[in-house]
Length: 282
Length: 163
Image (cartoon, rainbow over the protein chains, first blue to last red):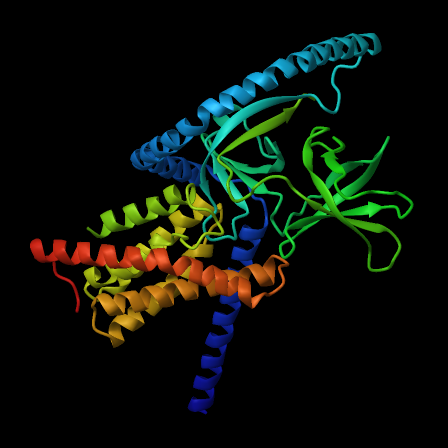
């Protein structure tokens, strides 16, 4: 009788332990997979540690910058000559751009439109560290709430869109890259064809082929490899006309009902040092 | 000395992540190496060691991953394995390298299974293997360097550590 009671007690303890373990795992999974808002306590710790890291990393940064500078000096003069030539051609485009901007403003005024889908303000930032253990799909930048960064702001570099802000602290922010395999939000995109645009949804990223998948394309739309993909500006997050990548392949979906496009970004996601955040004028 | 090693390793993880490409062969996981190196300085006081690991794990979560208790648990498991190895083997440079290797493999495997199960990524053994060997080279070099430095310092200042 006593032994049976002991056995029941032991079983209860084991069941209790398993339940607690499952609850803890569930809690951790929930925290890791959802874009939760950081608490003041977490924000303070993160900011403090990153400030110390910045101070300690200054000598390393200084040495690496000096090495880069000496490397760049050799090719700088050639670059300067090239840029001078390009600049002469750019003047023409600059004037044309200014004229078009002026015309756009006049038309906006005429139609009483305050903002268009492509209106945004820019904010530049430096990458201070990359995700170390999470398969490299987030980066931390040195601009935070203090500089006007808010969750959801799109981040771009010269070659195109790289992701969006998922959390902010007072002086830093975290950006999730569009190469993350678990992107919950889908991006509305348009693909440039000969004389028109075809609209689709950027739905996922294939880690094996390093390509993005665009869905919702009709089989009657003819899209060629190399077509440029940009954002449509539909939705609250991304402004219109932000370059994402180029089409590398067209195939039909599993049910043979619509086309699925493969798109490759021009961005080198392994080497991102500076980013620009875009804020839509709404 | 324990705090110094931990802070330097922790900070170097973040600083170097800016300069080392994700697909390179030199991925730093210095915080895990520091857990191996500092264990003997706790003189078998496991309670203090695990309390220390808990703090580092939480800091790692908040600073680098925006998560809570994820690395905390992985570091606890790694801490348990480090304790077990130190109980079975005597502490020297070779065992430190061995424990570092085992800890990094364990960290990568747990991380990878988590990604596969909860982040809709298909399992690819080559990816896992690549993530392991890309983390080993630099961390073993760091382990050797920091072991020799701490050995010299503890001998010079007669700091006690378990053998």
